Image 1 (cartoon, rainbow, N blue to C red):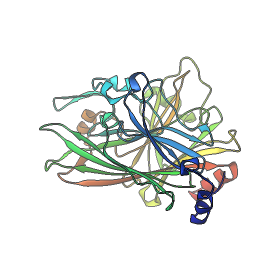
Image 2 (image 1 turned 45 degrees about the vertical axis):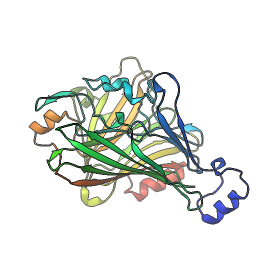
Image 3 (image 1 turned 60 degrees about the vertical axis):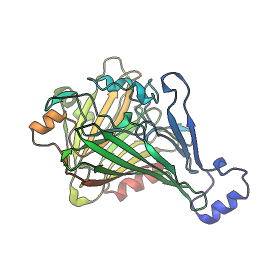
Length: 354
């Protein structure tokens, strides 16, 4: 892959192109097939081999992601469904869930459906069903930066009102995506604040050769079924016919700095891995979801600010995070690709020799 990571390299490449999207940049478009019709999206080409798609009408989440033509993510059969088809009741959220590199869950509730304080809440919240406004593409080939910003507002009359100011950026020539969120309570009244970054990996990055590494201090199963497979938490098997979802949670030692979760497949290419980096003081938990069934073959590593319980259960257990009136929280999640087994080994050593 040609090198675009320096100004000199980009200047030389520029002389050889009629349009810089030959090498790196963004392309905006509207999907037009089936229940995806009308959904706005942006393809991002970093020039390093990493490409991804930001879906403006789905909370500025990220659906497609690939590296040198190799798919990295799990995609449901739904695709990037237009948010007009979103249904909030029960588990109907699953009908519009596209998986992808990032589906944001929250920001006023997540987890299983429940009735909390008289309010009926469905699965995993509304963020990913909300179209972004004030979307701005600040990408510049000359400066070597790709940057897309937007505003996602979750609000209801007489109820909670949150704004997520999202900034997604990458350096041209680098295989890294940074998601920066500023979550703001725009009312004077305190409100629940739960957020989970549902980051989903799939074939061929994910297969029976894949290994998972997490810099957690401890981990536990959410239920008895998952507990029965806890010894295999960091590995994956071939898809079967009767495998159900397994759910775990990790916690971290905040004194050790940044937290990491990595999926690596040493049999793919010359070794390929993706890491997730986040601050455990802001996102103290990682939810770990795996399904090894046919078609539903997925691993999700999900930094979050709380456990993946219903809001009712979080409230009853005294675990419900609160965003005070007019308070703002800043969150950063970094996702990057590691190319080659030597580089994977060096990366694991650099973060503590897992």
